[in-house]
Image (cartoon, rainbow, N blue to C red; front, side, top):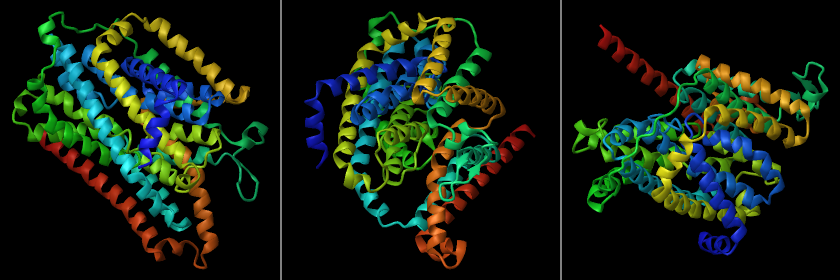
Length: 500
């Protein structure tokens, strides 16, 4: 297998290992900061990768995404404030354990479960990605556009609480992506006479604004007092024995596969995987009455699913150019910056790079696992010593520097500020920033394949109906929307009956 030579190559490169180690630490710390996500950290660090070689740049951001997902559990357990949306499920049992003086035990369970889930997800990615790429190579423009269409529907309808607002967020992302020159006729679109807009909206300032500034504005608005850390001083309550962890293993194994499956579906993400795994774990648990009051299994299940999403979410990105998560959408920018064309042909032109990235992912999992198992409490104490009045102004100023250095253009700073207010408004109005950004990234490829399909057709849009594979993906998108509508209606009826 290609992964073994890649592992040997990466282990023999001390500089690359240094970037992976730094990413493991940075991701864990960022994930543990309440209200600051790994996506925001990756967006703000993206300009740094302009000056790096392709593999270290990709590995650095990829491992930050992995360790950041895990780091969110530290905030959830210690501070009762989930560092990421996915770690909200961990908070349900993690914080009660901390109140019982078992914070270190809960964090060890979270660490081991995260590592196992992440390893399973990464191995499934390595085993299946070339097979998916081989199938993708046989797809023509009609089939690829149908895949994009299904992705838009799934992303817009599934992410967030409201289907209407989710689809509106996705549509807005497509609309913003159309700003600039038409790729075929070179006519101006939505530029309003501005020369700066003829090149379109930059991905880097847009993402920094949406994910970083938008989050900073939201945190400033909702700022509260000092965060209190829960931690045990009793060593007997801090150790984790095999007898205590053994009942967690069936939940970890099941949740890892749940997370891996959900990770392969564009737009669903780790938050949905974590709550699905928690619900399924509680349903199958021998002690369901303890869940929600400090069950170790209630920490293990969502953490395994949360981190198992990481690897498989790269499959649609690498094989079809469709990001399965916001982190994947940001990584597209790194590939494009370094002139690497993503898609199924990538496994013909850049195969060694892809498997070296997978090897860095495996090594990064081991690194954040070791650091987290022995040092998560130290990270928690470090976070409590950073005043928010210092942290968020530093992030705010760093965002301006990052936006400007991406292309050396002051207009990008204006774009970032506008996107920051837009991201803040989206959060307040329950629109979805993730759906907006992913759709923005997908729009270019969708438009290209749509036009190519029409050029191949004598019957216009009917080509999408007459090609069986294209029709299948169109129906998948419509079916996903129908299932989501039924699910929300069922929940609404249940609430109505409960309130009656």
